[in-house]
Image 1 (cartoon, helix red, strand yellow):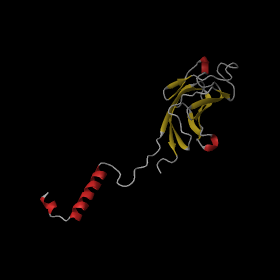
Image 2 (cartoon, rainbow, N blue to C red):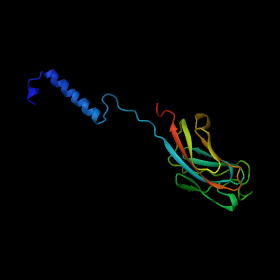
Image 3 (cartoon, rainbow, N blue to C red):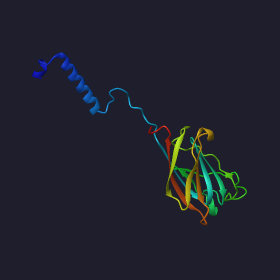
Length: 180
C-alpha cells in the first residue's frame, strides 16, 4: 500500500481498471456486451406398440397417429396399449375402430392428443431421432417448416416381421439458429 501513495494518479486509475477487468473475467461477467442466449434443444421420448407402418405427427403440443398398414399402434392382437410421450400415456381413439378392432384400415387417423410437453416451438428446427428400442425401423420423414405448419412426422415401420413389438425413440429438436 505504501507504494501506491507515491504512484502517479493516472497509474493508480489504470491499475484499478485492470483490477476491475480481471475480476469481471474471473467471475465470468461480460466486460462489454451481454452474452446472447442460444435457444434450448427440446427432447421428446415416444414409446409405442407398433405393427406395420404408422406415422406420428407432432405439432406444438399435439400428436396424431396415421396408420398405413396392419394393426394401428397399440391395437394388435386385441390389445389397447397406450402410446407414451415424455412419460404421459395416451390411448388413441381411432376413426375406423368400428370397422376393425385392430383398425386395419389404410390411412386411418387417430384422435388428437393435446398433452405433448414441452410444447414444440413454431419455428424451423433440426430434428434427430435416436433409437432406444426398434425391432425394425423408425425415422424422421418430415422436418418442421413454415410450409408444413411446423409439423414433424416420425415413421415407425414394423412391416417385415410378423406381429407387433414395442418401439421407443428419443427425438431432439434443435432450433436452426442454435450454435451459430
